Image 1: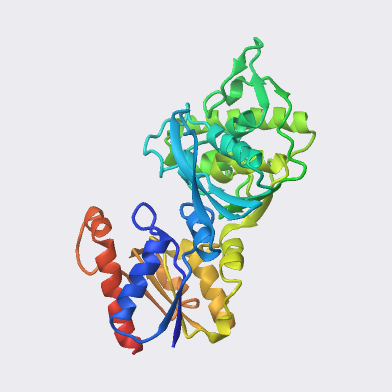
Image 2: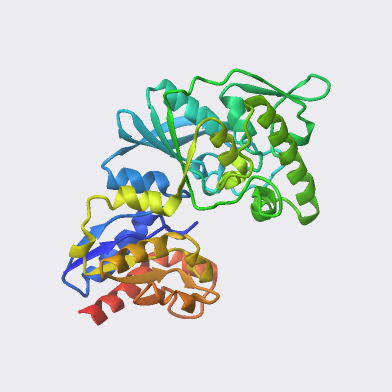
Length: 366
């Protein structure tokens, strides 16, 4: 028997690799099978590790600044001599800080890392866009790559999510990018502005208060108007422009190509696996509900399994609203929680809970 283990991370709890290892260790106690681990991601937390693990790459440290311009050391992935992968989550996201200061938050660090990687000779970049705590339209990132923003008095601005409305002029010369491939890995399709844009859809989780949303959206709209004039092009309504607080928009303007995160990662990570030789697939995520059907990784994996007649079993941290609508994709769905407990308890005991759940599922299969 062959089992493919291809989960997403349990956000703010277990990495995708650790989830896969716990699934394997639990199943190994109750079933005799060859188990193939392929930790997955959809552009957010774990994107670097998923590609590095599956493609035999390596992690490398890099120094930059976080969303508040504080020095940090983070990491990127090296796939080969010309290909690198980064994720905004470990530069300007929740992996770096739990602080929510949207007025001051900037994507500058992302641009700085891109610049350093190009200077190190990389010519193909994969950029995971999930998990940012910024809402600056990618202005800070473009600042790091050579553009300068000025206010009405001609003063140079250090741009952030809170002062985009002050920008009246953009000047500067971008770092040469003609020979650079930039692939954007995103699990969202939002435009930059408007009711479905970055601010109104994701702003609250980044610390923007309800009564401030209109002001931040107006600032983003102002920045886009001026940047559209600078580049003589308009990507503000393109699918994915609103990803990562508008970093998607900034990267589209410099030649980035948007890919569906789950599909793109699956295409890369599973390219060497013949699914017709697999008996079961195990996948999962931190919380599963009806929204999982809208392009989330577990359903992407299940669809691929179903196309080859492979049964897919979902094991998630929790099962939420209308999860029963997903039974067309999965043979069965399981929450690892085995009794009444707090979220803190579930997170603390996640390894054990996940392994025990998989022991029981393995007994059923055996």
